[in-house]
Length: 71
Image (cartoon, rainbow, N blue to C red; front, side):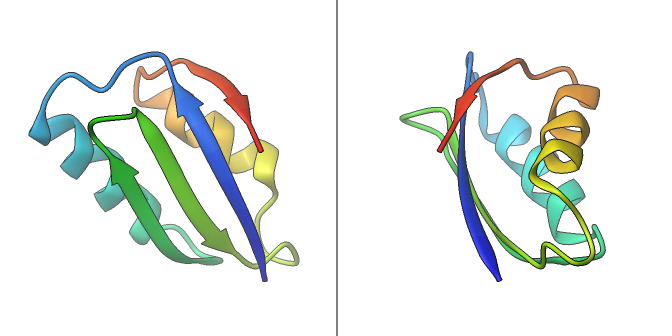
């Protein structure tokens, strides 16, 4: 299992949090996802054999949220 934290440009409302978390939690290979509203960060635990960090980034950006960085 791997862990990544993505820094987003902005998360403006609780429904944005629900939208991102809901999509990630339904994605194969992701065991845990948490969006921190106050810091606009997304923490994800995932299986690298099923999904890559780049694929997760693309899924987040596909919802309309710009990813500024990851660690």
